[in-house]
Length: 474
Image (cartoon, rainbow, N blue to C red; front, side, top):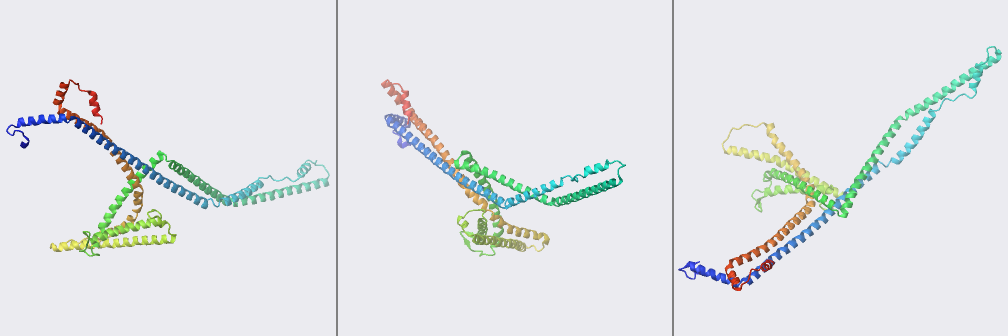
């Protein structure tokens, strides 16, 4: 600092002289410095403005691409739902309503027969023609009539009465026979009623399915039209699926960690103990590979069952080859589960041996003997856990596929949001930089305020507000 003094013996005078020289220099360079400030303000504002426009355009492009992806995903889901409902309708009509025409014909025939029998049963007893008048005339004959005629008429009367009784008895027998036939048809009527009720339920189920199809078709039409309401609904549904899949995968990772620790110790007895791969023991790598193989086998099993669709080429394979791959995947899972079960048992034995070795090295000769039934509980628990965990890890294919399918929407949405936020920040920084540069220009004028005031007094000019406003514009 002392090297800058003009007079080292008098620092105050030197600083004053330097200040006066800087005032003169800054006053002389005022015009180019103002132009430099204006240029710097325009450059910074323009750069931030271009950055904001670029971020906005990229954000809009990403949001548009995300919208297209969501619409395509929604369209595929709606088409699959409609196809599934149509298959249900086809199965319902083929299985439940296929025998409806025959059932309807039987119902018509039985209804006609029952109606005819009921009409026959409802007929009144026939009256013998003319016998009623004849018997009435005989009954009115005087008591003093000719004995021969009276006897003949009485015989006629008796014969008419017996004929009437016989006809009435025959009619009653015929009616009882018809009633017996109708009574025998009661189970058939009940079965017919049950069949009609089942057919009605099938028709109601088919109608309910058609209502669901109408709802899916309405959603499909909204998706095809690209309505904002449908896009927002599908975006929210994708977000829900992503969060749920993330939670399930977190639980699965916890299960994989438990599975890894369950077999890491006994795996050291099966592989070389001194070898390392990438700084990790071979036993650790082997246990990790076993866990990953279980996940891979589960993915192939779910793929062959048609639950997931990671590999589209596998869908083109014949059914026989798909069954072979499914059998291999399930067999591999079973084999790995059995291996883990045995390793879990071996782990408990290794732990007991290590504990006994530590006690013998510590000089402990007497120890409490544990209950054999109680000591077997950890072994059984670890064996069951080692057998079940591979099958649970096999189910990780379903949330993994959902996470991958919905992860694109989440990534694009977050990217668009971040770009929009950066664009807004760049726009604010552009305005801030312009005013900061303008403030720096005013601070420059404040520094040389004395020369400026002397210049104004010498020239007799007034401070121009319009000039200051023009200088404020970049």
